[in-house]
Length: 324
Image (cartoon, rainbow, N blue to C red; front, top):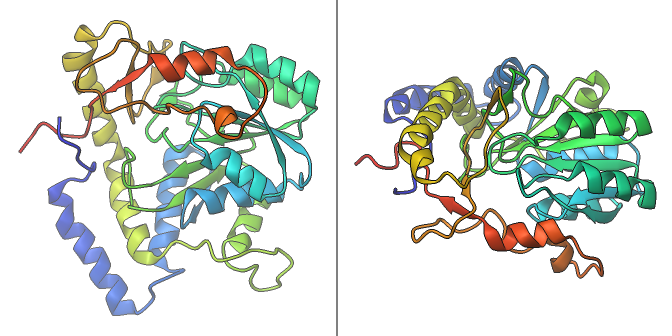
């Protein structure tokens, strides 16, 4: 299956109309389409939404809002280095938690042990491959009980849901990426989602140099209007894209790959990746093949993470990637 970005050719005319409107108004940033993208994403995700130029700016805003500088944050090792690097850039110490073999996501059992050992101020849970962490309820309840900030890395999770609940709504904040390979893409971009109105106000200042009272020490993490217009088109199309990928997986892939990630009842994956546990010839590679704790030379073992790195592969699954 050939790689394709999930974008319908029939939407090109609409997108050009949006871009023409931007050119006519001469407002290329902080305008109508950024607000519209945020409103559409908020309606989809059932949470306040703030657009950023990338995942990293949104993650930094969340980390700095909770005033945990200098404290320990727990992070799964089975993730992209963006998760621990943003945390370190925000002034925190990072320690790593093992994952589960079943879902490749943060292990609740290891998390309990690491909470006891490190007394963290915050925890990252990463929704791997397009599905939601199978243990998200237990993790959220533990963090609430221990008064630990829970941050959800939703970079893979566009279109996912569990009994109707969307990624980013279990924790104190969720952070999406719209990088070029994602199920929903704007080329570059990010979105912070939260139920916390104070975090929304903080984030809007943080992405824009702290304007206008400069009480928030932000930088430029704004999303431009042309990118936001793509986001509007893509958000309107998201249900179609996710439905197509799920139908394709069920009809054409699942019967041939029984040894795969099996979702709990009521869970829908956005299928950023179709993950299997048997070697395949035409794999698109692995979600991650280098655990973060090894990259950062931590002197402890995370056996499930090491197993996952060696024993999973990704079957090609791109939106209409088998059509000419």
